[in-house]
Image (tube, protein in one colour):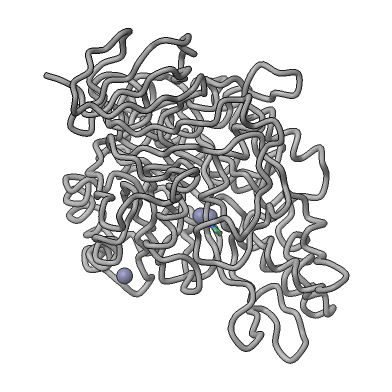
Length: 502
Ligand code: DUC
Ligand code: ZN
Ligand code: ZN
Ligand code: ZN
């Protein structure tokens, strides 16, 4: 037998436990083969001494945008996945995006596969963005994609080129119910946003700050309640992505209290950043463009606190980056959304970078200290184990347990991290030219990232150690419901009066 690698002297954290010192992780052929004390060493066994530091499962970032048609200036697979491992993330789920004019999604998926193949430092999968869910796609192509391991879709309720109306949403939900794929939803009311945007434009209010004015919380609130209603009617689990406001989150909480399988996601930007950032700086008023994302940053520190409560109390199932980066300052000083000295928030690409900073930002607030906002176990649930379950990776990703892929983050021992780490663009590995968290201090940073038993990030010795073709496509199974009535497959359960028409 014999192990390829033993990680010793760490404190192992899983979704349920913080294991005391002395439990070693034995790794063989890229998998965790056992946890135990005094594991046998051979001369060929590599040993990593965690020096009393925490060890958490490799991050699963279930919401990133790499090499996507509608964000052409952002990261490609090389830079995006490199940034992932530099911040402890070993699995990303990115998007393959259907164009509205396409009545088959198969060529599109193939194209996105080509973009990622041999270009990823970390393991990866795809969600399909459905913008034109025709009957033949839903009946013939979706079963095929599911058999090929693409078991989730994203639907938009806003953006002209992407959005679906209620009848389309209902049809996809019925299909999700029948086929068992996981449905993610971008919930904002499109017409509210259009009305305000047109009126702001007419009044000449087009600076980046007005992006936040144009997408008020009530737009998120209405769409959230509507999609929960449609999900309840069709008895179908959903996940509402990138939630930013308390009034909308309350609908999720209420639905979960009724044991409905309504899942929700929030992202670092909604825990740390406020809309004042959209006003830019004295030196560069347009710098607010760096923080344009949708839903927008909210106005009040109370909004951030509300999201933190959802993190701690279980309302959110996943904490993803929604890494959707665009370069701010292009060669020649060209900035998207700024033309002839006029700023137009409408033309600023939506989204912020964050795949590399996601884990360190949240880990800073995990623990048992006075200023902790969540437990270490909750940190693991949100950043790794629950997204793995929800998106069909249970048994492979998201835990430190025998049989799982040996994907690990070894943090620094607290004694070596008294000052913390200052986040600086110059130390990050993405392909864009800024981070919205510049200058923020986090308490810790991944010392090592391990992907299937191989060290791919060693912060003290060379940084990125992995190879660009090391990441493999993950053929995912069907997801498992994590919120509501737990333990079931994503297929809904038939109850009561729905028997008459389902
Ligand atoms: N939705 C996303 O998921 N990411 C960036 C912008 C958006 O609207
Ligand atoms: Zn396409
Ligand atoms: Zn979205
Ligand atoms: Zn996104």
